[in-house]
Amino acid sequence: MQKKTQILLWMVIAMIISYLPWYNFSAVLKSISAEFHLTSSDTGLIIAAFQAGYVMVVIFTGWLADRIGPKRVVLYATLLTGIFSTAFVFVAHNLTTVLIMRMLTGCATGAIYVPGMSLILNWYTPKESGKALGAYTGAATAASAGGYFVASPIAASYGWRAGMLWTSLPVFIAFFIILCLVDEKPSGKQAIESIPISNITSEMPEEIKRGKSGPAIITTGYMGHMWELYAFWGWLGPFMVANEIASGVSASAAVKWGGLMAACIVLVGAPSVFLMGLLADKIGRTKAIILSSTCSLAAEFFFGSLIGKSRVAVILLGIWIGFWVVSDSAIYKAGLTDMVSPKKRSTALSFQSAIGYSMTIIAPIVFGKVLQFYNDSTDPTAMQFWAPAFIMLGLGALLAPISALILRKIPQAKLMAGGKL
Image 1 (cartoon, one colour):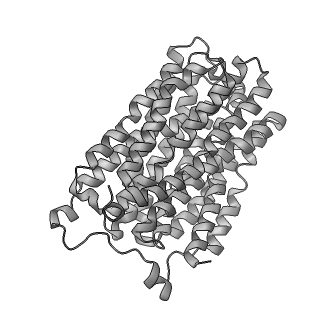
Image 2: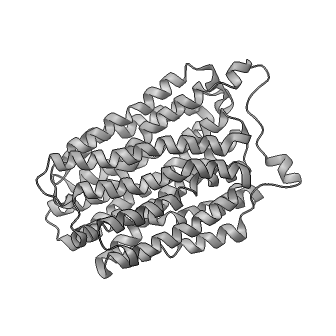
């Protein structure tokens, strides 16, 4: 096995473990909501607080990774993620403490993803970056599903604290994987063979090489993508639990089976990110973005209206959205790095992530407000009218394919994937 493949494999394993706390809160929401008397607006605020923590640190950590190296940043961020997520179990006792601890966990996880991508790109050429980043982003998706898979059944049997604890303690294993098994960049012969070269050719005009329109447009599309993705993931667990309750299932069984179904829906996105990253390397970044984003957002207009009508229909359409909604995540990263200098790669990625993740602060709150407006209950899992909230996600996601269509007309876009649009 090539050294770069080994590095990618260890980074994928570390990502799966270190991101388990991302959705462990959503997985046990029914129990936490009942204990602390949280409304749907409170839930949206808590989800947004986690995303706000991410955004608060992501720009700084990208800049820091360009100066001290990405491995060091990823290493200590992973350690802090384990500490804060574990501490949540013992510290949280009301809305305020839940908000603070989730924000701190968001801050820690916010320093993992972007420096991790930069570390991987030290080993892969631009023509391979789509599949490499796709594998890494797919690992983050698998971790999100893992949070539901592990936390939901444990919480149903032993309480929400046990569910969150067993999705937090494994993070310390990821810390030791990065510490002992991951090298920051190639050396010697490997460096000659593996270090990415610039994708900017001497034939292109200087103003195109240094232009900012391409990165700005692909980041705009990323905003639409993130508006849909994280609000969908964050609210999927409560929605699936609500669907089980609407189907006549008891509350405890609904938490267990609703969480497991949500995990399956999120998990189907893990291979899709790798597959679409690989496809984007072959057919072009913008074509892949248009395909993925259109397939997911169209289904959002129908998903919420299915609650309580047909469990099979909810699951099947949920799986469809789950596959497509995350599939283009790595493409925005690969396209951006194709258009910027390798020396500024982490900084550029951090700016894109911060701008994109700012949508994940707003969207969950808006989703919760819309949900509250159309329902009388304060318990999200008891609500019956979800369609307007999911339609709101689809409308915001239109920004992704529209931006990709505009990007196809920008000369700088030819820098992506060896000139494939």
